[in-house]
Image (cartoon, rainbow, N blue to C red; front, top):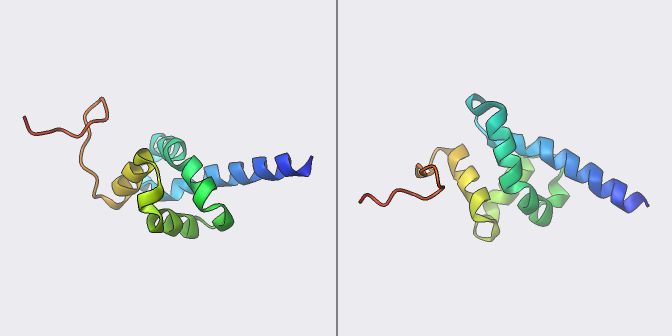
Length: 95
């Protein structure tokens, strides 16, 4: 039974760690959004880097092409390079 406990502890650690990708001014809302967008990617691709936040971020960026679109968007936003999506999540087309 220690395996599920270990997995739960790892997931809890990763949830706290992913907050590092969100700019400080984004506050708790950004942290929750980051967790939701990147948790699966971080656990799938970067679990060996838990709990080191810098290593997780570097891992996600190294694996950018393999991570989900929502997580890519959060990484872009954290770097200040994301296009501004509308309320539906789509990028404005300029029409």
